[in-house]
Length: 463
Image: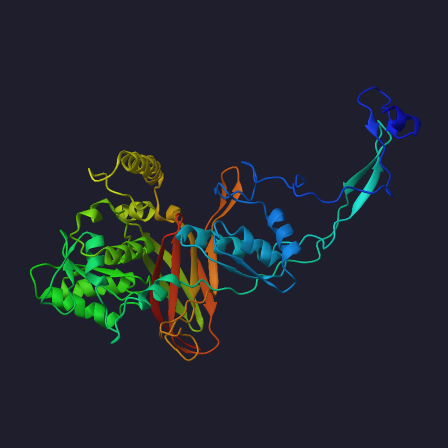
């Protein structure tokens, strides 16, 4: 301290207070350490906070990407979470791939990238002003205000469901026919396999069960065949288990019910169910008592969506008029895979399983409280998108399985501004077609917890 004082490197504030060390601009600084304390964490009041306990601030991930990935390089995040890495990579102009097995995570990341579109870019290089402190005379560095060099233009990206189709390949025999996974899937769902029918594979306490393929949607003509076969029995209720969301839109289910008197319900096969079936096949017969301790996954129903299209020459207005949420299915979609508490569990296993059940019951109580406060269906909708030309043209618009690919041409979503303020949804979409003709319009809706649904309408567009 005395040596620094003799060298004139100590500044004493005029009004008293703590002495400060004088640092000149040409002094050598400290190299960047492995502990970075210059980036604020995502605290409880941060605007980017999305509720993930491990969420990282965007500037932190930007620094990591800038230091480790060259321009136009590829960034891979195998645990996408809330989408911070994808947003940071998009901001820096890097290509990226994000992977997650949670519906809500994919929904958050997609919404986050769409919200980035049109936001002002920060200056390429931060600049500073150097101002003398009025109290101590030290020179302080303060960020200099700069104009944005432009807006972010988010590049097109797609959402792909990969895991189900890849896993299905290992479960097909040499002739391409399903092996033993179908009866096990029925047991995991809570039913029992049956024989003697073409399209009815099992039964539960509600009615018949049909298990669709794991590598493709159930074709519409087959859904009609399932209903007609059920109509010849004394049970007029069928549950179709499908790995594909687009298997049977709500309007088609209503038409099947009107013409066959058979109620068809669609349940989505979750990844946890596929894992359970694979484990059962490895362990052997489902009658084995060891299987009693296995977790029970939850199958959920897609959202039922009501659309109305108004056509005026080349102009089409699409109105989102209804989004029906099955409360029981809604709760199942949020429920984790829970192990049943049986005598076969050890003391430690029973304690762990009970803790998981208790956490779910607490979460379920919160969800039920929210459901009681929700007075309109609009409160469930967080995002909806429209594909103005969803027609099945495999050569131009379809995937490798011939199924149409949903292209987002228009979207509306809630934007939370903080302090309880939320920008409302736009419930009417509009498109002016360049060519007259018949078009198929698809709308995909996502609720506030990441559950999806799709609906399709056909329109005849004039000149």
